[in-house]
Length: 280
Image 1 (cartoon, rainbow, N blue to C red):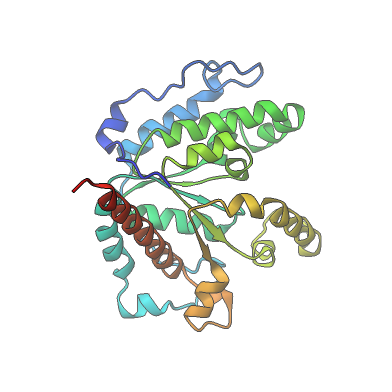
Image 2: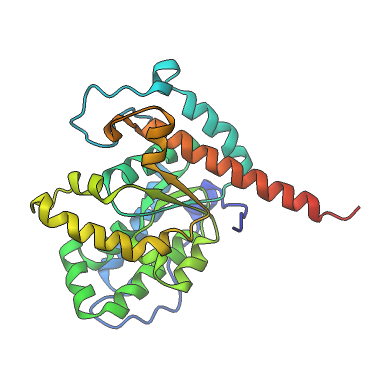
């Protein structure tokens, strides 16, 4: 893991983030086509205008209204206070969340960004926007898998060159050595959510019985890639530690606190290594 000093929000807001030397073939080009505008707009203006927003919700299901987090019951701002202390130690280092895409990971990414006073981005969403939408991105991937992978790499390259970001990274982030190397510019965490839980949150319209086998296969295929992350935060483990029998009882705050603990361990370890390397 390489922790680097991050770029400040002011610097990022004034920097040009237009990628250089892109040579994607038509019809997809992050640099030359109009479809690149959403990435440019998202990375520039969201950073300037973004304001922290702290929310409390059940991460498993937005319709769950009776979930009460143990931490929030004692002190709703505990995670935020802890994040403030850790943010100083991070020195602007970005955080990349890998794992299967689901509402839990998304809610966690947003909440963590708010707590750290960072900026949140979803790498897949940026690729979709640049391609002209999710359906267009899907068609592009089917027609040019290599080109799509290049697009994923380019987005990660842009994001990894910046600081003070929480990025929900798509599966492409752990499918190539180039992308894995880009994740080393920050801290990477595997948000491990059981496929069965992901299937329950699926809104594709397909029956859960059809979605679940596909998700299990995807989990098996991607597990080794996810495991290359600097640390793992398991939903099942968090539930067990808190004494919850139902995974739905785990909240965004619960997961955020576990993530912050892992980040704290990693930053402390790096600090110790740096001190040990200093000459007498």
